[in-house]
Structure formats: structure tokens, C-alpha cells
Length: 211
Image 1 (cartoon, rainbow, N blue to C red):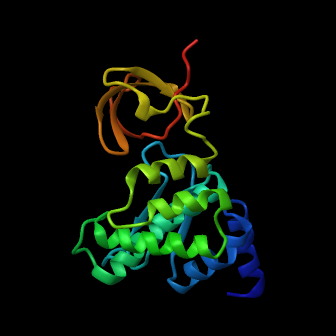
Image 2 (image 1 turned 90 degrees about the vertical axis):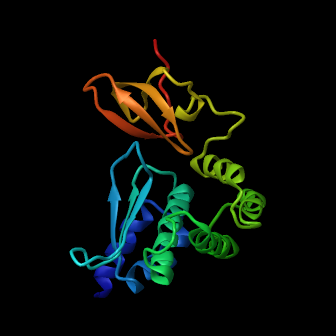
């Protein structure tokens, strides 16, 4: 890449990442020749990793572009951990098994030690990464903190707060109406009443209040 191409790529990353994380993330993307994409809001996920295959010969990572910078970084590390797991184990292990969790923990700890996360999040990061399996409750609290949503002070209900059979709308797709069908760990099966199709919705999606 030329110097101008490098700066152009970094300028794009600066729109989404904490400033200190731009250079190391750029170098990681370049070192692994990742096809990196910024996506519009997706209700089912914040990011995605696609490993190389005979018909897809490169690593591909996508992250939603509407995320707060430090949460964007956390999602990026989540997907980078999938890449690291693929390099170490191929497709022989579970997507979020202990192998992936170790890579994710190591990435979070490294980026925290390098000063890329807020100081107030460090005790929670330490709790989250203290052992394998990762502390899931601490992880959810960390996500809310980095999203800019304090669990005790948040104004909006989240999909994960809803009971089965609740009818609701979400902030990212206010024109659609859903009914909760089944709760999973972090994502929820919902029926869209507008088109009678089933969707998977993130538990962290904000619910709109009905007037």
C-alpha cells in the first residue's frame, strides 16, 4: 500500500475506533490480509468473521458501524479471536469454546494493558477475563458499559428484558413489529408481524416504548 492509501484506510478506522487503537488494528488487518467491512445496523449481530475456504480465499471481518468506539473495539477483538482460533485449530473446535475464549481473553487483556479501553472498565475487564470459561455476567456488564449504557441508569428496555409472547418494536427498525418467540443466550427468535417471517434479534437491541 502507498502512504496515501494507508492514511485513507486509517482515516476510515478513526471514524469508528478509539484513537489509540487505530494503528494496532490497522496493522492486524494488514498483517492477516483481512477483508474488513463496516456494516449498517444488523439486529441479529454486531460483527461477523468468515474464514477462508476454496471459494473464499481470505479472512473476512465485518463490524456494525453504529457502535460506540470502545464497544466497536470489543466486537473487533471478538472477531479477531475467531480468526486466531481458525489459524490455531481450523474448524475442529466449537465457535465459542474454550479455545476461542482463550484467544479472546488474551486479546482483551493485551489491548487493556496497552491503554485502549477506559480506565473505569479495567476492574470489570479483569473480572471478565480472570478465568476460562469467561465470566458471562461480567461480560454482559462490560458490553453495556462500553456501549455507554449503564445497567442501573439506562432509560430504554432491551429485548433481553422481554417475556415470551411480548409484542414490541426496536429502535433500529421502528417500522417493524415483532413478537418474542424464544429466548436464547444472547439472541432471541422473534416473529415479524409485518411479513410473518422469523428473525434473530440481539438481546441488547433497544425496545421502543409504545405511545
